[in-house]
Length: 47
Image (tube, rainbow, N blue to C red; front, side, top):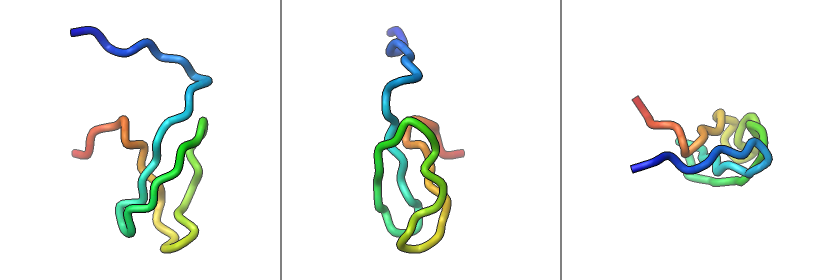
């Protein structure tokens, strides 16, 4: 199995772990406007 090719111009999905709101962005969008919790990049595993 190979990793998907990385392209820094592609958008990533980010999710608020508090309310579940998702957004797509090229850079980290900061905090959720609904509950003020930092977004998490969904491509990164939760540990």
